[in-house]
Length: 372
Ligand code: G6P
Image (cartoon, rainbow, N blue to C red; front, side, top):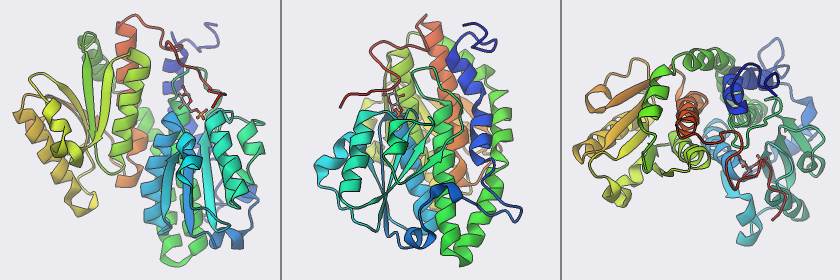
């Protein structure tokens, strides 16, 4: 078993360290020399894909947060409306789906029963179905019209890490491909994003090399009872994922919020010493979003919160209000999730280890939930 872990103490550590490859391998072989995406594997007719006027993403757990990231990106790049449904809620909300709807399922295992049932229901309603999946020969891809595999390699630890980054990457690939099919400026923009995306694995690698302070913070916090996570735009699902990782791995009460929602309720939770992670959008995010999140940090700090700020390199505006600044390399706003989630994974892993818990096999959880 030690050999299987490649020198790491746990599968989770190994899998976190493999994330640059999970992203790079999911991009690999999908672009031509002209820097365009080639997705012959999709086996859905180009004209049919061009006629898609709505996308619904179905998934559970971490995969659903990948779907939420995808919504922001795909809508921005293609102007096609995207909805994200928890797979177990999908069929019970009387979904509006027809032949022009693309239903995209996201599943690491390809065996999650809730997700499978959602895909089957979508097909009955006449939708086109694409599966984003990490496991060859699994059930969900077989039950879908087409599959876009993530190439994260086998994920053993129950809580998902590298598969999440690969899922986000595959969603970007799909969104950029649809933008390319639309042509014109959509296609030009997609090409630029794709070229930037190819540079992200090296940035994840660099980030993984700078996690000592995050581990130290986690060890200091082994007795913490509650941690909050704030994010906005694509940082919102990352806040949710950071909270989920902490629940799963360290059994600590954790909640993720959209930072703008703070003043509508959650700010009542803030008292002296309450730790709060804030995923800060890059200063170049449109509509002044960065400044708004910096104000949120200021507000909660004034109420005693201990602010653990995840911010882009060079973002000095956060410094006066941060108890800790965790730096991530620069990317354009919609690609930031591939970086900002990494310190949150490392934090949960280290805190779980500090508490002496079984990181790879948390209590009550299964890697793949094959019952409805
Ligand atoms: C389980 C796992 C989670 C995972 C979810 C969806 O609950 O514990 O880590 O995110 O299932 O799994 P899937 O295989 O469909 O991605």
